[in-house]
Image 1 (spheres, rainbow, N blue to C red):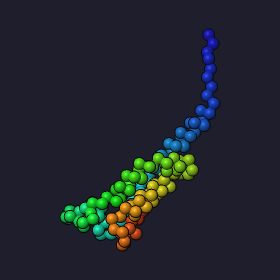
Image 2: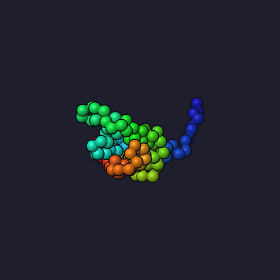
Image 3: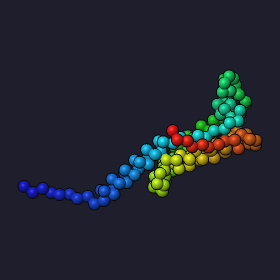
Image 4: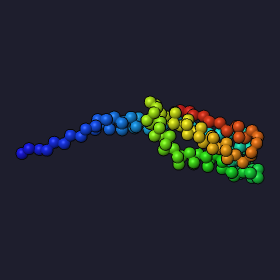
Length: 129
């Protein structure tokens, strides 16, 4: 009885690509990005209450400018992830930093105060987990 042989061309390349993508995704899990402000009233502007006492903060409180920015970034993160996985050898820190900078830019655009130090105080930090 003779068997029929099937040969798939390019299967080794596909396996190598999948392994590279898996390594890149594992690299992403090793980094955490932070978008923050150290201004004393930044928390109240974001959540509408003081961090410690829980009392009602300023009238402009509850704007959610940072949370909205982060959710916008996460909905569009697939493009940055795919670029990082194809262009960068070790994409973990690069992708996280790029996403955090994007969130900072959107946060600065949405700050409820048009002038002042709050907008400039929004910082980005990327740290290993």
